[in-house]
Length: 384
Ligand code: KG4
Ligand code: ZN
Image (spheres, rainbow, N blue to C red):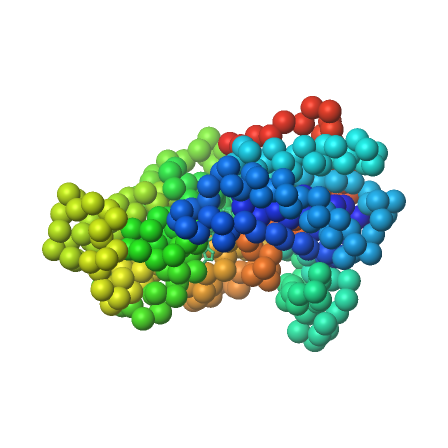
């Protein structure tokens, strides 16, 4: 079973071929990130235009890297949400057209679920170093997990657009334990970077600045959201859990706290125009703010992950999404979780086509419904 996956929900135009939900045959990603850098965030119109230029060459490259012709492909999987409308449209219209003209079944994929399913990939076409489980795919070296996840599986999805904890009992059978009620954690990293004048994307630049900072210099507040969804309540009844805490998250409070702390560090108030703030902060103040913010933001999600592990005793804990690249997240999880969490190669944590193709394979192998190539619509606000 070979599935071509197409991803275009944000600023990466990506395609990949995955076999049997386990083997990564190709992975091609073209990013327009450099075009967005001057603006400090993704500009939707620029992203959509870049997708249009890149999508056909990227799909052709993914097929050729996988040594596949269209005859070898059993189906097409495409991200239909969540994401930027203009960006999603390019991927979905391309996939719909290809499904019709090449006569292939079409699978509509939820981007967020894809971030977890990429962790099922444990093999590549060509072993680079079998002892360290490294594979060469599309000219790059990937270190993949040695084993596929096992159910029940707890998924922590942390990216620029999402922060959520999901418990899977089996494929396509899951409960959303909690999600962010405002900003996603990656978005908070991006906004904090902008406040203190670090380059976009904020995750890596905050992490780099934090290396020289004191993580205890500021005691930023952690969110205290107590909401519990009806699904979580029903799950607790089913398993006889008496816990009452919720798993929802919030990152807008800490972002405002960072702004206020930075203003007062330079002896100013909220009346200071935001564009003047980075120029007044010195390198050591920036480093302390970055390190303290990073510690508290990561602690917030690790607290909830640990609580979910204790309550639901999953057999696998999977971390997905761009923020899974954070070494502070990996350090705190390793220190606090009773058994290690599983990550894939960092190149597969950020947006890519392999995550979409991997989930597409499981849908195809398990007889999940296909999408109508004549009518599949984008769903920018899709949730789990
Ligand atoms: O999954 P992704 O590529 O795109 C979305 O689906 O949003 O995630 C991108 C996010 C950005 O917000 C970026 O700042 C964050 O991942 N990120 C990090 C790190 N590397 C990337 N956040 C924290 N620490 C990092 N090392
Ligand atoms: Zn993503």
